[in-house]
Amino acid sequence: MIFRTHSSTRYSVAALLGSIETDHRLAELEVSAPLELSDNMIQRVVDRGRVVIAQSVMSTQIDRVFRENRMVRDRFGDSVILVAGGPHASARPKELLDAGFDFVVVGEGEKTFRDLMWCLINDNDPANLDGVATEDDVSFPKPRDLPKVSLDDYPPFALGMNILGPVEVTRGCPFACKFCCTPFLTGGGVRHRSVESVMHWLKQAVQKSGFRRTWFLSPNALSYGGKGRDVVPDKLEQLLKESTAVEGLEEVFFGAFPSEVRPEFVNKPILEMMRTYVANDTLQIGLQSASDKVLEYSNRHHTVSEGLNAVEIALDCGFTPHVDMIFGLPGETRKELDDTIDMCQALSDLGARVHGHVFMPLPGSSFENMPPGRLDQESRSTLGELSRRGVLTGSWSSQEGLAARLAAPE
Ligand code: SF4
Image (tube, rainbow, N blue to C red; front, side, top):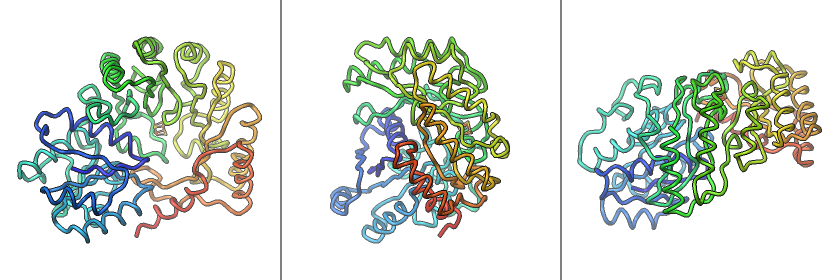
Protein backbone atom coordinates (compact mmCIF):
# COMPACT_ATOMS: atom_id res chain seq x y z
CA MET A 1 0.00 0.00 0.00
CA ILE A 2 1.28 3.42 -0.94
CA PHE A 3 -0.18 6.18 1.26
CA ARG A 4 0.42 9.36 -0.70
CA THR A 5 1.28 11.89 1.98
CA HIS A 6 1.10 15.67 1.79
CA SER A 7 2.09 18.38 4.25
CA SER A 8 -1.63 19.16 4.80
CA THR A 9 -2.48 15.55 5.73
CA ARG A 10 0.62 14.29 7.50
CA TYR A 11 -1.00 14.13 10.96
CA SER A 12 -3.91 12.04 9.66
CA VAL A 13 -1.52 9.78 7.76
CA ALA A 14 0.57 9.23 10.91
CA ALA A 15 -2.55 8.23 12.88
CA LEU A 16 -3.97 6.00 10.13
CA LEU A 17 -0.67 4.21 9.59
CA GLY A 18 -0.40 3.78 13.37
CA SER A 19 -3.73 1.99 13.22
CA ILE A 20 -2.58 -0.17 10.29
CA GLU A 21 0.77 -1.16 11.81
CA THR A 22 -0.78 -2.24 15.11
CA ASP A 23 -3.35 -4.52 13.43
CA HIS A 24 -1.83 -8.03 13.55
CA ARG A 25 -4.05 -9.09 10.62
CA LEU A 26 -2.09 -6.70 8.40
CA ALA A 27 1.39 -7.75 9.52
CA GLU A 28 2.35 -8.82 5.97
CA LEU A 29 1.18 -5.60 4.35
CA GLU A 30 4.02 -3.55 2.86
CA VAL A 31 3.43 0.15 3.42
CA SER A 32 5.19 3.26 2.20
CA ALA A 33 4.19 6.90 2.71
CA PRO A 34 5.93 9.04 0.07
CA LEU A 35 5.51 12.80 -0.20
CA GLU A 36 5.39 12.52 -4.01
CA LEU A 37 4.05 9.87 -6.38
CA SER A 38 6.24 8.91 -9.32
CA ASP A 39 5.59 6.46 -12.16
CA ASN A 40 8.80 4.58 -11.43
CA MET A 41 7.98 4.13 -7.77
CA ILE A 42 4.44 2.91 -8.49
CA GLN A 43 5.69 0.64 -11.30
CA ARG A 44 8.20 -1.03 -8.97
CA VAL A 45 5.38 -1.92 -6.56
CA VAL A 46 2.91 -2.90 -9.31
CA ASP A 47 5.53 -5.32 -10.70
CA ARG A 48 5.31 -7.24 -7.43
CA GLY A 49 1.53 -7.47 -7.03
CA ARG A 50 -1.66 -5.58 -6.36
CA VAL A 51 -1.26 -2.08 -5.08
CA VAL A 52 -3.53 0.19 -3.09
CA ILE A 53 -2.82 3.92 -3.41
CA ALA A 54 -4.50 5.82 -0.58
CA GLN A 55 -4.95 9.55 -0.05
CA SER A 56 -6.45 11.60 2.75
CA VAL A 57 -8.20 14.43 0.92
CA MET A 58 -8.54 17.95 2.26
CA SER A 59 -11.03 20.19 0.47
CA THR A 60 -8.21 22.62 -0.29
CA GLN A 61 -6.27 19.91 -2.14
CA ILE A 62 -8.87 18.52 -4.52
CA ASP A 63 -7.38 19.87 -7.76
CA ARG A 64 -4.02 18.27 -7.04
CA VAL A 65 -5.62 15.00 -5.91
CA PHE A 66 -7.85 14.77 -8.99
CA ARG A 67 -4.93 15.53 -11.30
CA GLU A 68 -2.75 12.85 -9.72
CA ASN A 69 -5.60 10.36 -9.74
CA ARG A 70 -6.13 10.78 -13.48
CA MET A 71 -2.41 10.37 -14.17
CA VAL A 72 -2.16 7.21 -12.07
CA ARG A 73 -5.28 5.66 -13.59
CA ASP A 74 -4.19 6.50 -17.16
CA ARG A 75 -0.78 4.99 -16.60
CA PHE A 76 -1.59 1.95 -14.45
CA GLY A 77 -5.26 1.18 -15.15
CA ASP A 78 -6.79 -1.48 -12.92
CA SER A 79 -3.49 -2.67 -11.48
CA VAL A 80 -3.95 -0.04 -8.78
CA ILE A 81 -6.85 0.29 -6.34
CA LEU A 82 -7.49 3.93 -5.45
CA VAL A 83 -8.77 4.72 -1.96
CA ALA A 84 -9.72 8.13 -0.56
CA GLY A 85 -10.60 9.28 2.93
CA GLY A 86 -10.37 12.48 4.94
CA PRO A 87 -12.58 15.57 5.26
CA HIS A 88 -13.51 16.06 1.60
CA ALA A 89 -14.17 12.35 1.13
CA SER A 90 -16.49 12.33 4.13
CA ALA A 91 -18.46 15.33 2.89
CA ARG A 92 -18.54 14.55 -0.85
CA PRO A 93 -17.94 10.83 -1.39
CA LYS A 94 -19.69 10.82 -4.76
CA GLU A 95 -17.43 13.54 -6.12
CA LEU A 96 -14.39 11.39 -5.28
CA LEU A 97 -15.92 8.22 -6.75
CA ASP A 98 -16.71 10.18 -9.92
CA ALA A 99 -13.07 11.32 -9.94
CA GLY A 100 -11.96 7.69 -10.21
CA PHE A 101 -11.49 6.46 -6.66
CA ASP A 102 -12.57 2.84 -6.20
CA PHE A 103 -13.37 3.14 -2.50
CA VAL A 104 -14.09 6.12 -0.29
CA VAL A 105 -13.79 5.93 3.48
CA VAL A 106 -16.39 8.17 5.10
CA GLY A 107 -15.91 9.40 8.67
CA GLU A 108 -13.17 8.49 11.12
CA GLY A 109 -10.69 6.21 9.42
CA GLU A 110 -8.84 4.32 12.14
CA LYS A 111 -11.12 1.27 12.13
CA THR A 112 -12.71 1.50 8.69
CA PHE A 113 -9.47 1.92 6.76
CA ARG A 114 -7.78 -1.07 8.41
CA ASP A 115 -10.90 -3.21 7.84
CA LEU A 116 -10.95 -2.10 4.21
CA MET A 117 -7.30 -3.12 3.78
CA TRP A 118 -8.01 -6.49 5.37
CA CYS A 119 -10.92 -7.08 2.96
CA LEU A 120 -8.81 -6.13 -0.06
CA ILE A 121 -5.98 -8.46 0.98
CA ASN A 122 -8.41 -11.34 1.50
CA ASP A 123 -10.60 -10.74 -1.57
CA ASN A 124 -13.62 -9.97 0.59
CA ASP A 125 -16.09 -7.44 -0.69
CA PRO A 126 -15.53 -4.20 1.26
CA ALA A 127 -18.83 -2.73 0.06
CA ASN A 128 -20.58 -4.04 3.17
CA LEU A 129 -18.26 -2.27 5.59
CA ASP A 130 -19.81 0.61 7.53
CA GLY A 131 -18.31 3.82 6.20
CA VAL A 132 -17.02 2.50 2.86
CA ALA A 133 -18.62 3.99 -0.27
CA THR A 134 -18.32 2.50 -3.75
CA GLU A 135 -19.59 3.52 -7.17
CA ASP A 136 -22.45 1.00 -6.88
CA ASP A 137 -23.93 2.91 -3.94
CA VAL A 138 -27.02 5.00 -4.47
CA SER A 139 -26.87 6.63 -1.07
CA PHE A 140 -23.90 7.49 1.07
CA PRO A 141 -23.26 7.32 4.80
CA LYS A 142 -22.84 10.47 6.86
CA PRO A 143 -20.12 10.57 9.54
CA ARG A 144 -22.74 11.23 12.23
CA ASP A 145 -24.41 7.86 11.48
CA LEU A 146 -21.20 5.86 11.85
CA PRO A 147 -19.63 4.43 15.02
CA LYS A 148 -17.20 6.79 16.73
CA VAL A 149 -13.62 5.85 17.43
CA SER A 150 -12.30 5.76 20.99
CA LEU A 151 -8.90 7.46 20.84
CA ASP A 152 -7.43 5.11 23.45
CA ASP A 153 -8.02 2.14 21.10
CA TYR A 154 -5.53 3.44 18.54
CA PRO A 155 -2.02 4.88 18.58
CA PRO A 156 -1.67 8.59 17.84
CA PHE A 157 1.09 7.95 15.27
CA ALA A 158 3.00 5.20 13.47
CA LEU A 159 5.91 4.49 15.74
CA GLY A 160 7.00 1.35 13.89
CA MET A 161 7.34 3.29 10.61
CA ASN A 162 8.79 6.27 12.46
CA ILE A 163 6.00 8.46 11.04
CA LEU A 164 5.31 10.66 14.01
CA GLY A 165 2.97 13.54 14.62
CA PRO A 166 1.14 15.27 17.42
CA VAL A 167 -0.83 13.35 20.02
CA GLU A 168 -4.51 13.96 19.39
CA VAL A 169 -5.89 14.36 22.91
CA THR A 170 -9.43 15.48 22.08
CA ARG A 171 -11.78 14.75 19.17
CA GLY A 172 -15.25 16.17 18.56
CA CYS A 173 -16.69 19.55 19.43
CA PRO A 174 -20.07 20.47 20.95
CA PHE A 175 -20.01 23.93 19.38
CA ALA A 176 -21.37 24.25 15.91
CA CYS A 177 -19.62 27.22 14.33
CA LYS A 178 -21.16 27.43 10.91
CA PHE A 179 -17.90 27.92 9.02
CA CYS A 180 -16.29 24.82 10.55
CA CYS A 181 -16.59 21.21 9.38
CA THR A 182 -15.24 19.63 12.59
CA PRO A 183 -18.69 18.93 14.12
CA PHE A 184 -19.82 17.29 10.85
CA LEU A 185 -16.70 15.13 10.67
CA THR A 186 -16.20 14.15 14.29
CA GLY A 187 -19.55 14.85 15.95
CA GLY A 188 -20.69 17.00 18.83
CA GLY A 189 -19.69 14.48 21.50
CA VAL A 190 -16.23 15.08 22.90
CA ARG A 191 -13.81 12.18 23.31
CA HIS A 192 -10.46 12.50 25.05
CA ARG A 193 -7.41 10.30 24.96
CA SER A 194 -6.82 9.25 28.55
CA VAL A 195 -3.74 10.47 30.40
CA GLU A 196 -2.64 6.80 30.68
CA SER A 197 -2.78 6.38 26.90
CA VAL A 198 -0.93 9.67 26.32
CA MET A 199 1.79 8.55 28.76
CA HIS A 200 2.07 5.13 27.13
CA TRP A 201 2.68 6.52 23.66
CA LEU A 202 4.95 9.35 24.78
CA LYS A 203 7.20 6.96 26.70
CA GLN A 204 7.33 4.61 23.69
CA ALA A 205 8.14 7.51 21.37
CA VAL A 206 10.95 8.73 23.63
CA GLN A 207 12.45 5.23 23.93
CA LYS A 208 12.05 4.05 20.36
CA SER A 209 12.27 7.22 18.28
CA GLY A 210 14.19 9.62 20.47
CA PHE A 211 11.15 11.89 20.80
CA ARG A 212 12.21 15.11 22.53
CA ARG A 213 9.11 17.24 22.11
CA THR A 214 5.42 16.69 21.56
CA TRP A 215 2.35 18.63 20.45
CA PHE A 216 -1.13 17.92 21.70
CA LEU A 217 -3.87 18.22 19.11
CA SER A 218 -7.36 19.39 20.03
CA PRO A 219 -10.14 21.51 18.49
CA ASN A 220 -10.31 23.42 21.81
CA ALA A 221 -7.34 22.56 23.99
CA LEU A 222 -8.77 23.95 27.22
CA SER A 223 -11.71 21.55 26.99
CA TYR A 224 -9.49 18.56 27.82
CA GLY A 225 -11.05 16.08 30.23
CA GLY A 226 -14.61 17.45 30.20
CA LYS A 227 -17.71 17.46 28.07
CA GLY A 228 -16.38 20.21 25.86
CA ARG A 229 -18.26 23.17 27.29
CA ASP A 230 -16.13 23.97 30.36
CA VAL A 231 -12.58 23.88 31.59
CA VAL A 232 -11.89 20.98 33.94
CA PRO A 233 -8.76 22.30 35.68
CA ASP A 234 -7.81 19.07 37.50
CA LYS A 235 -7.89 16.94 34.36
CA LEU A 236 -6.01 19.54 32.37
CA GLU A 237 -3.31 19.85 35.00
CA GLN A 238 -3.00 16.08 35.31
CA LEU A 239 -2.38 15.81 31.54
CA LEU A 240 0.24 18.57 31.58
CA LYS A 241 1.90 17.53 34.83
CA GLU A 242 2.30 13.89 33.89
CA SER A 243 3.31 14.48 30.27
CA THR A 244 5.95 17.07 31.16
CA ALA A 245 7.39 14.62 33.68
CA VAL A 246 8.11 11.93 31.08
CA GLU A 247 11.81 11.28 31.29
CA GLY A 248 13.62 12.32 28.11
CA LEU A 249 10.78 14.50 26.87
CA GLU A 250 12.00 18.07 26.93
CA GLU A 251 9.08 20.10 25.59
CA VAL A 252 5.28 19.81 25.54
CA PHE A 253 3.31 22.20 23.33
CA PHE A 254 -0.33 22.75 24.19
CA GLY A 255 -2.90 25.28 22.99
CA ALA A 256 -0.61 26.44 20.20
CA PHE A 257 -1.14 26.00 16.44
CA PRO A 258 -2.46 23.67 15.01
CA SER A 259 -4.62 23.47 18.15
CA GLU A 260 -6.66 26.41 19.37
CA VAL A 261 -8.53 27.64 22.43
CA ARG A 262 -11.96 29.23 22.52
CA PRO A 263 -11.80 32.71 24.11
CA GLU A 264 -14.36 32.14 26.85
CA PHE A 265 -12.35 29.16 28.15
CA VAL A 266 -9.38 31.43 28.89
CA ASN A 267 -8.95 32.60 32.48
CA LYS A 268 -5.97 33.70 34.49
CA PRO A 269 -5.61 30.75 36.90
CA ILE A 270 -5.72 28.27 34.01
CA LEU A 271 -3.13 30.10 31.93
CA GLU A 272 -0.88 30.61 34.96
CA MET A 273 -1.06 26.87 35.59
CA MET A 274 -0.38 26.12 31.90
CA ARG A 275 2.58 28.51 31.84
CA THR A 276 4.38 26.41 34.46
CA TYR A 277 4.27 23.32 32.24
CA VAL A 278 4.13 24.10 28.51
CA ALA A 279 7.02 24.99 26.20
CA ASN A 280 5.03 27.20 23.83
CA ASP A 281 5.24 30.97 24.12
CA THR A 282 2.16 31.36 21.93
CA LEU A 283 -1.52 30.67 22.53
CA GLN A 284 -3.82 30.21 19.53
CA ILE A 285 -7.10 32.01 20.18
CA GLY A 286 -10.10 31.90 17.85
CA LEU A 287 -11.71 35.36 17.75
CA GLN A 288 -12.71 35.33 14.05
CA SER A 289 -14.43 38.74 13.72
CA ALA A 290 -14.66 42.22 15.22
CA SER A 291 -18.45 42.11 14.89
CA ASP A 292 -20.73 40.57 17.51
CA LYS A 293 -23.41 40.33 14.84
CA VAL A 294 -21.15 38.28 12.53
CA LEU A 295 -20.06 36.08 15.45
CA GLU A 296 -23.66 35.44 16.36
CA TYR A 297 -24.65 34.65 12.77
CA SER A 298 -21.71 32.21 12.64
CA ASN A 299 -22.99 30.57 15.83
CA ARG A 300 -19.72 31.22 17.67
CA HIS A 301 -21.33 31.63 21.11
CA HIS A 302 -18.80 34.20 22.32
CA THR A 303 -18.50 37.94 21.96
CA VAL A 304 -15.76 40.21 20.68
CA SER A 305 -15.09 41.48 24.20
CA GLU A 306 -14.61 37.90 25.45
CA GLY A 307 -12.06 37.50 22.66
CA LEU A 308 -10.19 40.67 23.62
CA ASN A 309 -10.31 39.68 27.27
CA ALA A 310 -8.69 36.33 26.39
CA VAL A 311 -5.96 38.15 24.46
CA GLU A 312 -5.20 40.39 27.45
CA ILE A 313 -5.11 37.48 29.89
CA ALA A 314 -2.79 35.57 27.58
CA LEU A 315 -0.42 38.56 27.42
CA ASP A 316 -0.57 38.96 31.21
CA CYS A 317 0.39 35.32 31.62
CA GLY A 318 3.40 35.54 29.31
CA PHE A 319 1.93 34.09 26.12
CA THR A 320 1.96 35.82 22.74
CA PRO A 321 -1.61 35.44 21.53
CA HIS A 322 -1.95 34.24 17.95
CA VAL A 323 -5.45 35.30 17.02
CA ASP A 324 -7.46 33.72 14.20
CA MET A 325 -9.57 36.13 12.16
CA ILE A 326 -11.76 35.33 9.15
CA PHE A 327 -12.45 37.94 6.46
CA GLY A 328 -15.59 37.76 4.34
CA LEU A 329 -17.78 35.65 6.63
CA PRO A 330 -21.42 35.36 5.51
CA GLY A 331 -23.48 38.36 6.56
CA GLU A 332 -20.43 40.60 7.04
CA THR A 333 -20.95 44.17 5.82
CA ARG A 334 -18.21 46.32 4.35
CA LYS A 335 -18.01 48.23 7.63
CA GLU A 336 -17.67 45.01 9.62
CA LEU A 337 -14.88 43.85 7.31
CA ASP A 338 -13.13 47.20 7.84
CA ASP A 339 -13.58 46.84 11.62
CA THR A 340 -12.12 43.32 11.52
CA ILE A 341 -9.12 44.53 9.51
CA ASP A 342 -8.67 47.48 11.94
CA MET A 343 -8.79 45.03 14.82
CA CYS A 344 -5.85 43.13 13.32
CA GLN A 345 -3.75 46.29 13.71
CA ALA A 346 -5.13 46.92 17.23
CA LEU A 347 -4.30 43.35 18.27
CA SER A 348 -0.80 43.76 16.92
CA ASP A 349 -0.41 47.02 18.89
CA LEU A 350 -1.35 45.07 22.03
CA GLY A 351 1.40 42.53 21.33
CA ALA A 352 -0.61 39.78 19.58
CA ARG A 353 -0.06 38.26 16.12
CA VAL A 354 -2.97 37.71 13.78
CA HIS A 355 -3.55 34.61 11.67
CA GLY A 356 -5.76 35.75 8.79
CA HIS A 357 -8.14 33.60 6.75
CA VAL A 358 -10.60 34.31 3.97
CA PHE A 359 -13.93 32.56 4.50
CA MET A 360 -14.12 29.26 2.62
CA PRO A 361 -17.45 27.42 2.26
CA LEU A 362 -16.04 24.12 3.47
CA PRO A 363 -17.93 20.98 2.49
CA GLY A 364 -19.66 19.56 5.57
CA SER A 365 -19.93 22.95 7.29
CA SER A 366 -23.28 24.71 7.78
CA PHE A 367 -22.00 27.53 5.57
CA GLU A 368 -21.14 25.06 2.78
CA ASN A 369 -23.55 26.74 0.37
CA MET A 370 -22.77 30.32 1.31
CA PRO A 371 -20.92 32.62 -1.12
CA PRO A 372 -17.12 32.39 -0.78
CA GLY A 373 -15.27 35.20 0.98
CA ARG A 374 -14.17 37.94 -1.43
CA LEU A 375 -11.92 40.88 -0.79
CA ASP A 376 -12.11 44.13 -2.69
CA GLN A 377 -8.89 45.69 -3.95
CA GLU A 378 -8.62 48.16 -1.08
CA SER A 379 -9.04 45.47 1.64
CA ARG A 380 -6.59 43.23 -0.15
CA SER A 381 -3.94 45.91 -0.27
CA THR A 382 -4.50 46.84 3.41
CA LEU A 383 -4.11 43.18 4.39
CA GLY A 384 -1.05 42.91 2.15
CA GLU A 385 0.49 45.87 3.96
CA LEU A 386 -0.28 44.28 7.36
CA SER A 387 1.37 41.07 6.14
CA ARG A 388 4.46 42.93 4.95
CA ARG A 389 4.77 44.58 8.35
CA GLY A 390 4.50 41.18 10.07
CA VAL A 391 1.16 42.00 11.74
CA LEU A 392 -0.64 39.28 9.79
CA THR A 393 0.33 35.72 8.88
CA GLY A 394 -1.72 32.89 7.43
CA SER A 395 -2.91 31.81 4.02
CA TRP A 396 -5.55 34.51 3.52
CA SER A 397 -4.19 35.56 0.13
CA SER A 398 -4.43 32.10 -1.45
CA GLN A 399 -7.69 31.19 0.31
CA GLU A 400 -9.75 33.60 -1.77
CA GLY A 401 -9.11 31.52 -4.91
CA LEU A 402 -9.63 28.24 -3.04
CA ALA A 403 -12.90 29.56 -1.61
CA ALA A 404 -14.17 30.39 -5.10
CA ARG A 405 -13.09 26.95 -6.34
CA LEU A 406 -14.96 25.20 -3.50
CA ALA A 407 -18.10 27.17 -4.27
CA ALA A 408 -17.99 26.14 -7.92
CA PRO A 409 -17.09 22.41 -8.15
CA GLU A 410 -15.77 21.19 -11.51
S1 SF4 B 1 -14.40 26.41 15.13
FE1 SF4 B 1 -13.64 25.34 16.95
S2 SF4 B 1 -15.23 25.64 18.48
FE2 SF4 B 1 -16.17 26.10 16.51
S3 SF4 B 1 -17.12 24.17 15.84
FE3 SF4 B 1 -15.05 24.27 14.96
S4 SF4 B 1 -13.76 23.16 16.38
FE4 SF4 B 1 -15.65 23.68 17.47
